Picture 1 (cartoon, rainbow, N blue to C red):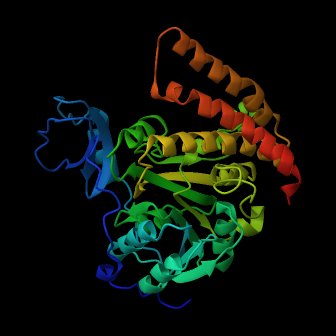
Picture 2 (cartoon, helix red, strand yellow):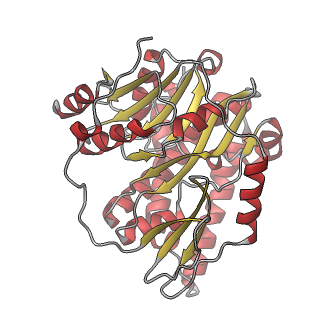
Picture 3 (cartoon, rainbow, N blue to C red):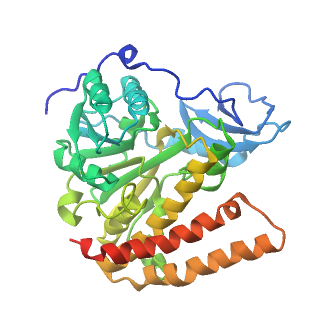
Length: 393
């Protein structure tokens, strides 16, 4: 594997992607400094210690930040525990993209500050309509691969097959990376049974109400404590379908290269461009079902740019549920686990009945606001699977 040499960040600079006035603020507050902070509008406060996020707090106008006891305890535990160390095994990063050259340029620029540079960055162009994506990749000095079959899991598989590293990290084009992302992600593979690692995803901005709603109701964040999901988690949840989606987000995940030899590649019927979502969680489900461990490592941090408009959020919610129910069917097809069907045909309808009942009696939430998209998406996912059930290999 040849050493990776990225272009200078200045050559990757582009125009700002949005000039919208912020609906809410994000304040990154180092705990080493004076914690006196009062919000002037809706605010997400992210507490940081030793350059890494350790907790958060939602504030309304006039409310003051408060370093809660559990955050202080977490800081103490991190400082007395083991510290991630640099690793020597080859590392590959795969970025899947389609027709978003400005976002891709921004993502690639964030690699320059990494405390551990990857050995290669592979950008998989998933059937973009012009040559702008290729031009951005060439200017950055990364490896360009073209995948003409539309679908995120097609692109993920092409990246995995091209990767030369022992650890393969995945991110999306709409992210920006914390400077320790590569180092802390790879350091989390400190036991042979750990085959997958996910990390903390925080919002890059909350400029619009749509971004605020998404972060409040469908956040990619999974908290600030390390969690190992293994056979015990799978066994205790399998009756109602193991909820593998709580493990993390596909925008921030990594695998030992060997796992693809053991359990295969991503199911190409799922995720963006096909069913709509859940190619990542279906794969984590397979990792667990095979007896391996998925680790959530909150010190592996990145920042995600959520969709700006309500129409985009509504479409996202629809496709999330479409992919979710299709994935439940795929999981049952692969493993025969009846819990997936129980979740799909019993637990999920009861959940929607509960949301509808509370709305009819005057209670409201942002999830209820998109109830129609959720129900239609769930039904569409089942129909998608029935039309594509022979896609299993």
